[in-house]
Length: 541
Ligand code: 1PR
Image (cartoon, rainbow, N blue to C red):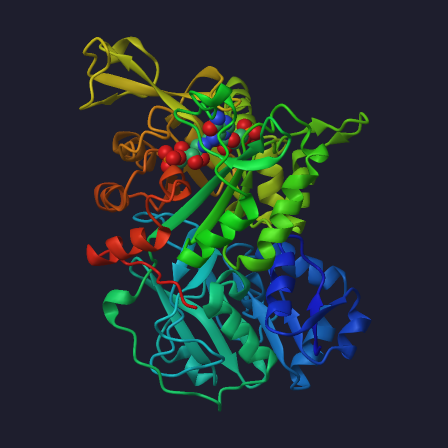
């Protein structure tokens, strides 16, 4: 098989990139020193995380002249995400650190006054009516970033670049650029399904700008970030010791009859693949009993990720047990090391539950000071905040006297058992087994300050009820923070997805039981959303 060379300088999920390259018929050879660059014919620069960190890594390892030389020699060169960013002159993310300056221009941060940042999800890379390296105007690609190259018509084109653009809110930015031997994408082709694999293949096969085919132009209505529909798999060991997908009712996963066995809804890898093929925009695995076990002994979960990332070319999140811990032999293992294992095995994001609540309690107890020692801070500073999701497991606490609680209450149209017309949401840990004296607003604002990039907002009262999402909870959380929120718990039919997207500002919506029980497919949800005028990504095969 023909080879492609990958620069091994970053942490993060490079396994998925390797899997994607292999899927399109190439093998990967690693470049581990600047001297190795010379042997590369085709070179790919992956990029995850922070602009300054990335550039510093490059220059301290002595890569800069070698990369410059490769590019100038005219050999194929591709850069992904932060890889694209460092080709520019600089970024507001690290104003003191110069970029490679191969492309004139600088990056700035997305404006978060009216939209969530990071920009996470499937968006266009619109090349008007041209096909460049397999990019199609009507396809969608997976982006995850807070900084962007603003698109100003003509500026890059004047430097000879062909530009693919995307729109987020009212900001138009660069999704990809190509010139001569160079292709750079802000999106992740390895996470962009068939559309992304096509781009990788076109680059590796040596298709260039000359090999263009005219495509239908993108209609304005199709531009912009699409509604993200996520399939979630709660995974645990059943009573026979097998890892199975399960699903609870208000977090109780045992059958009401049948001897109270753990409900077994199928095999994780197969189910993840099925949802990907139905068009799921992301797949989330939650290892729901990891608080009992040592995650390091939990190698099957890593195996699940590894195998899933071979066939699912969409973002994967893994949650459960991400915290500082002690292995069975007494070795101390940090949350960062556990997260690293997950990233190396194909995860794009880790989701932190119980440990985030404990960290937030300490944050308030310490007068809102940050010391950089929490799992959230450590993982987000190493891998970027887009890689850290905080999974929240709140439940309602009703009150008829909101003034008498210090918690952030809301008026509710669903009164409590004694007719109470207000409530607050108490955070829980250990899968809802322990309730803490912290409300959801306190938690999400604290973890946002620590560097979490996204909130997975469950709701114990709604979980498994098929009665729709808790819109009041989602609205309360959305108005408290700027990072994206994934609405979770309660989805029972496609109408519930339409409702949560039209009545709240949620950034994504997640379903579990209705998909596992085969009542609806992800595809049906998306078709319904499209019928109702919502922008969705259609699965390409
Ligand atoms: O605390 O960091 O070890 O993480 C544990 C993780 O496991 C947390 O993310 C927590 O939400 C999750 N978890 C723990 N126990 C359960 C349980 O169900 N007994 N599941 C659990 C959480 C909630 C959702 C579910 C939605 C949608 N599951 O992920 O998929 O509610 O369901 P629906 O659409 O069927 O209503 P840590």
